[in-house]
Each structure stands twice: as C-alpha cells, then as structure tokens.
Length: 317
Image 1 (cartoon, rainbow, N blue to C red):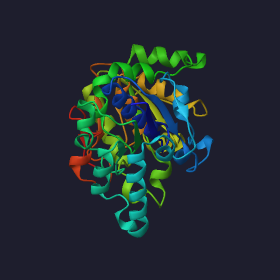
Image 2: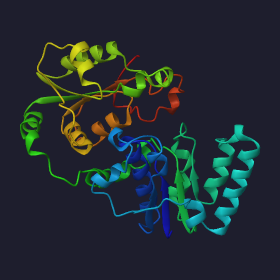
Image 3: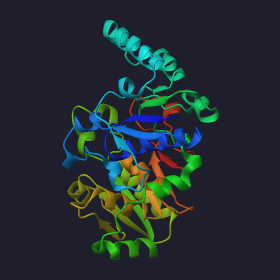
C-alpha cells in the first residue's frame, strides 16, 4: 500500500487505539505505506486545553503526515471513490442505515476500513491482518478499541507510546516512590461521564466501585500505596477515603507526563476510560494486578466489551 489514512477522533486514549490499529495494519502489509492522519473530527469536538488536539505528537510514534482534505477523495483509488460515493448517496437517502454493518462490510472489501464505533470485533478485519492486499490505499475510520489488533506488536507499541520528552524533574520523587513501593494507579473518570448527556451510557464507576476496588487491592497486595489520578481530583479527595498512604495528582501538567506517571505504577484500578486502559497496558510490570468494572458501557452486550481482558479482576457495577 502507498497510503494508510486514518480519521482520528476523541482525545489521547481514543487516538492511541486508532494509531495502534493503523500501525498493525501497516506491519501486516509489509511495513510499507505513508501514514496520513486527519484530525478534523478531533478539532471540531472541543478545545485544545480540553484535550482535543493531535495527542500523538507527544510520543515516539513513526513519522506521519497530516491532511485536512477528504482522505478517500484525495488518496483513494477509483474503485474506492466509487464505492464511497455510493455509500454517501445511500445514507443521504436512507440516513437510518448510516452505520449499517452490511455497508461497512462492503467498504472493507475495497480497503475502506470503516467500522461502527461500537463494533470493534477483530473478525471484521482479520483477513487484512493475515493476507497481503492489492489496495492502493487503506482508509481507516473507527474506534478499534480491541487489543487483539495490536497485542502481537506490544514491544513496538510500548516504545512508540513513550513520551518524547524526559520525565519532569519535579516528579522525580514520585517516580522513585512508584518504583520502590507496591504502587497502585487509581484512575477516576468523571467530567463528561457525569453530565446529563453522557451519564446514562458512560457512568459505570460510581463511588462504591472505587471503595470496593481499593479494599480488594489492599487484600491482594502487601502495603499498597495509592496514586490517584482524575479529571476531578478535588471530588476524589473529598469522597474517596482510604486508611493507607495515598498521593493525588497536582493537575496542570502535560497530559503525556500524566500518562507516564500512571503507567509507571505497578498495579491498577481503572475506570471505563480509554486513557485509564492505556495506563495499565503500557505498564512494564509483568505481574500487575488490574481491577476493572465488569462492563464498559451501560447497556452494552458483554461479548463486545473487548477492553475487559480475562486477566482483569472485575467488580460488578
């Protein structure tokens, strides 16, 4: 392939999944092809200070080109463009079929790696990971939140998702403490998850979940030390109580440093957040204990919760 184009969406955690999928696809096809990323969907969702930016720029990922134009029209083959136009016409006439599985299955056959954001099954893309294809370009649009896509490249992923900048000197004592103790990263997502718009679907991990997870981690580990990370750290200090040593993020630092602090811990209590998920995945501790909720989204088919690995300890929510 000459080009692997990706429509990025979401913030850092989401973008990391989308990049990892594209990287794995490129490696499966012989490691050839320019990586071209379109951040239009990211930028129109919010402001840079709220995390809606090119988050990949902070990591040691491979060189990529950015593009604001339509990736299919600009880099696709005649066949890909024809199928894409047919899809656009059809959803214009029948908008209820916009994310219809049969359409994405047809598009994938010509190298338009489209997927419903709620459907991250490996089987949708399995063939292209195991057979060489003849497409001029592959254009990717989806969430791809499934480690099966890239887990075989984990050493590469660990290296590329290491921040470009060295650890901040002001955090040296924290890094030392994380290395010398049974450090536990507790990642608490609130923010938009508790808003009226998102709460019904995304608010899975309530106060009781974290209380239970902390007590369970205290049973699993000897002398655990908890490091709390959250987009509402004042709420955490006020509501989530523990009788053992605990530290709280100061806030205001760069997001790449926060990610490195998180994955420098040895064990993890995660929320249903892609940012939290990557914190535990990038950990170098081969004996880590990970506690997670028993479902990722409210109302989700349990068989589609691909981010809840079998080796996680799951707490009913």
